Image (cartoon, rainbow, N blue to C red; front, side):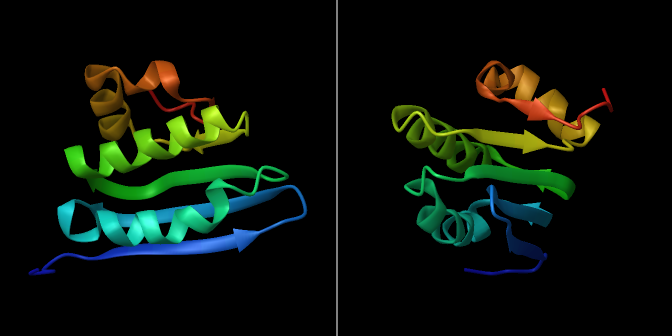
Length: 111
């Protein structure tokens, strides 16, 4: 696959949470990388999974699908997941697709 743009995942672990910081452009070319990075944390229910989108510049339907699948998997396990610092243009996409109603948000003051 042609990867002409950049996407980066920074991982941090704290005693109470796993944090994934997404940076750049998340699309079909990078969705599998996000899935692979998040999968080890999905089943670990003792920690909250936090996805930070502060530096995410673009997301397509494939990226939205990965986030939705993470939300569903954690919901089935009754494990907390939060999406934080959603940029306004990404928030609008989440609103239009109906994803917002499934997301526990924090630190998202930018409408």
